[in-house]
Length: 370
Image (cartoon, rainbow, N blue to C red):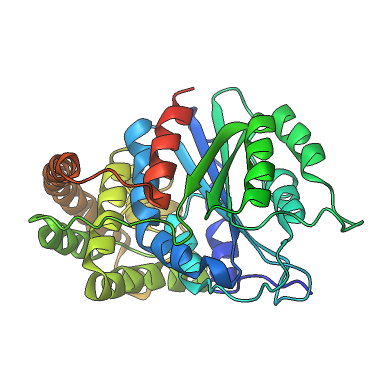
């Protein structure tokens, strides 16, 4: 039985539809997909991943600030569970990815092997990888149990990895725990996939959360930036953009360190995207980058407050929000730089541990530069 992760599925579809047919800017692309075992034994690692996905995304920005960043996920279990594989397409909308990741629950399993072969096949052959010369494709297989090699319908991992090599997709194998039978396969996958074999503790290792004196001010600035957002497009798309602003406020209230990570990521991306939320649907960001203008947007695709204004008032309102966002982003950039330095200083003092987020970030830094 197969099913899909459903949170924001309609909104995600809308968010991936472009509002403009302008050609994409010529810039490097970094695409990262996680192939994640979501059976019961992976519960603690998954909860840690939810807390650190923003810092992992920020590692990509720090390694290549101008890159077009897309991330995706293939969750897998086994035949007889709620789903065998569940795919979240590669997307620039990291807030959507985060929302879907929050919905993941570790359940199922039972017999030891899992549907690793099918999950890798989905990641390599069914995600929409970008083609081109200046592109990095990176996969992290994360799990603790070996693949079923007895499923006749599966494409076995050596065949899939041969295709990955043709597509220039690096496949890393992150082993949770110390199962010897899994280790043998994971080492094989990493070698054939031109990636790294990375052993970590079963629970994902110690997730290090470093709170800084700048977190609250960064969160406040992010909320002020959200106040400059003008949702536009079809009504469902506008609702989706509004949902992201509410999500940001909710994370700030429940998980301040994660909210600061989110704000830092968005702040660093804003220099090249002008975004206050990820994934588009914000008239201020698109107007600031020249992707559209107020006059080019159909009346029906404007929010109610702009529809009530005269054309010259609409332009003045968008211009005002662009200038306000620019000023806020300058303040945010300064605070994020201080936060980064504080975290780096604290990390030097902390004992080195093997954790999911740490090994992923270290591997990304090396492989993005390859």
